[in-house]
Amino acid sequence: MAVTERDPARDARPLSWIERIPGRYWLIGAALLVMPVFASDFVLFQIFGWTFILGIIALSLMFLGGYGGMVSLAQMTVAGLAGYMVAIFGESAISAISLNWPWYIAIPLALAIAVLFGTLTGWLAVRTDGIYTIMITLAIAAAFFYFVRQNYVMFNGFSGFNGVLPPDLFGVDWRGPKAFYYLTLFWAVICYLAVLYISRAPFGLALQGVRDNQRRMSALGYNATAHRVAAYAFAAVLAGIGGILLTWQSAQVSPGTAGIGPAIDVLVIAVIGGMRHPVGAFIGAFVYVILKTFALDALVAVGLAGERFQLLIGLGFLVIVFWSPDGILGLWDRWRESRGKDPLLDRGGEGP
Image (cartoon, rainbow, N blue to C red; front, side):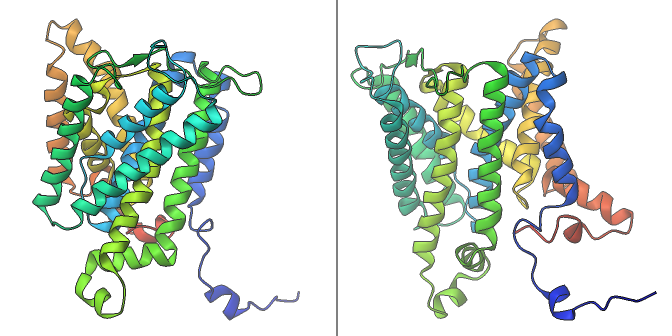
């Protein structure tokens, strides 16, 4: 029986970005594709649809924090701005303000404005470091919240916009449970793969180098400030997509959409899931949605006020961070290590 010789050069070649995706992710993807066959409309629309949306927004924060070493509390603000722009340029129940432009103009324009806002936020934030970056982005989030709440001419003040629905394309009601599930799943996969690709592209590798040693990267000729601002711009694309989908899911956008609470929730989601890999954003979002959906009802059922939910989230956050600073992904890695397996190889070599 002949033995086929292996080509060492071929075996030693670097894995492509798509080959780095572990096999179990493909199995999960197949399960997600057939999910509508056996899942209820509530699970599809409320649980998984909301998970994918929050995961996309948290993914923008994970990209900044995990690969760039920058923590921004303005990602939900960027998402909220994209939702507002879709309502203003497109159609809504507030016909006195909405311009009713076609979707192929309203959506790209809304996303472009959100990216511009995110880029300007990054331009300000990258000139600081550590706690000062967090404070600047938090101040921007707070300023946006109070501005839209008090502005009735453009943002309709406290009420915001309702009746903001996705466009009817190909004769499909994209807000229907199954259609909306596939819509959010599609964009979640696109954003996930985009982050995975960029993290191994020259820009992503340079950004990680700036994160680890800015002085050395500057000495090598890299513009650290430009890379960081560009990272904010890319993260704004992700947050903008998530913001538009979030607006379509709830069919409305208001100051509360981009309030201080939701901004902190995105940070909690990213940290709970883990900042070491893009999939952590979706894991954290799923945990958050499950708790938000079912734990709140359980607390009300036993006679506790609904506000106690935030206490539950806070306690869960403290427990996970105490046992694993790397979130649920860190717990997974520790479990893999206890079984004698390399967690880095198990992730296909990915991670910041």
